[in-house]
Length: 395
Image 1 (cartoon, rainbow, N blue to C red):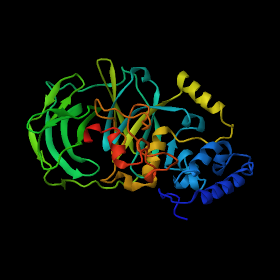
Image 2: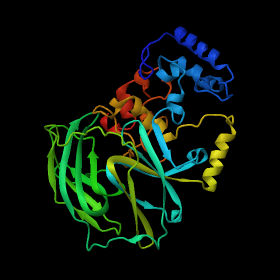
Image 3: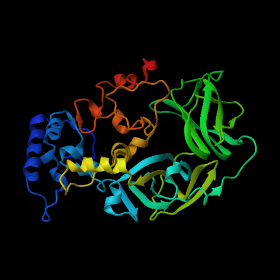
Image 4: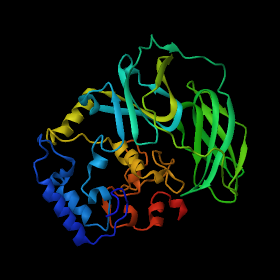
């Protein structure tokens, strides 16, 4: 049998059904010696899902081999070192902010009601390891005053980092600012008739990818940055071409740090609290909080329907992106669709294309989670139809 991480199977239904029967037979045991439910017993409670999955032509290998825990059970996929958190706290973290680009420094505007509490900070490095710790937030009075700079932000080091042909023809544009700002690119053939989605993540080091470009064209573009006071700055116009492909600085794989090396500083400005988190390695980062009445009630409602000994489940973000990339590193390559991004303004996402709670695209937007009659477990039988589901202008 092929590796359990392989993504395609052409196995007759009779054979697959027999394998499922064996899995159910073994899972009929009452758990391990301690009485706890073991990962190979998922089909005992979720028999309908398992039966429907193996009736399809293309079955995800962990499902076929009865290894549901690889994706669904917290700690079975990416390794997470949660420093300073007990088991109860781990299960009740509500993530409220995320920085998706790998950087050494991340800025967040923190909700004012979180002042004087703690937040959970989780970093991911592109490997299958995550690190997490609690950070105590100061009150507004304790935070440093945000440095006040006159006028609008200064934009410098504006450059086109990459032009490539992947699923779409795209250009990656980078620049820096002398203070934290948001980021956007205006572009077009000859005139600035189009724009990228606004990246509202505060930063001084910006990178925006412009997608859906045409081949053999010259594009005019400008970078736009707005600081925390709303002052808007636009760069001088520049031009890039899609006649030739290049990469100024190829992406390098990041080695996961052995321990979390995090420094946090907090600033205030007109009643707003900002957090600056710096690390020695380029990382993505997300912030969450523990507790809260609504969060606690939701967690208790979910847990009420599960056996007391039920294994802790992976959070939705990890389940639909992190776990996928951990087993399929090629998913970050040139021919892969961007994930962890919001659709362009005005784009309609079909209801059967799964998106995360905040509307971001995930791996499961194009692929079926467990099984499908379509090759690569795609949501549509034909790849063209899959693309046209969202990109109707390509038809």
